[in-house]
Length: 151
Image (cartoon, rainbow, N blue to C red; front, side, top):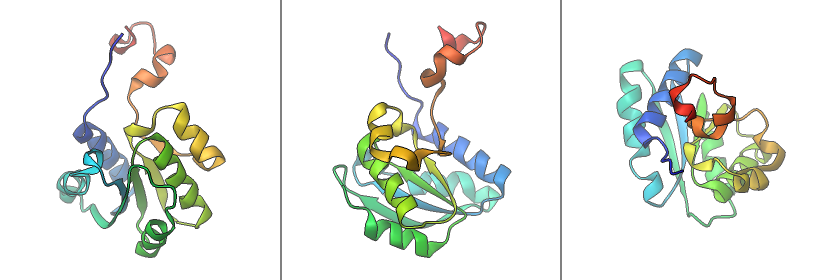
């Protein structure tokens, strides 16, 4: 079986919907500096703009980063309502851990790029209660029998 993840715009639309429902107006973005993270701030501002939602701080990290102290201090100082970590499994998990260790406030959301065990191994207990923008493929066995995405 081959499945592809939803595209970034679909994920960001869902994140904006959640921000609207929660009353979040400001978002801090911590993103992968590779092509995976390109255009995320711009698309988030485009989609969120009509709702008064904007990215107030963007921090980047290398795809092989292991230390997120500088990025998280800057994000913490931005005091956004919510913060989006946009990265791939292991580094995004380490970023999640740093988020908790450095006392960043505001809700935290992870992108659809983290859906595997490597993220959970890197993040450990810091992932408890985390909001993740994942497709239904990861919970296919929990879908109702008549859901067309279960096939």
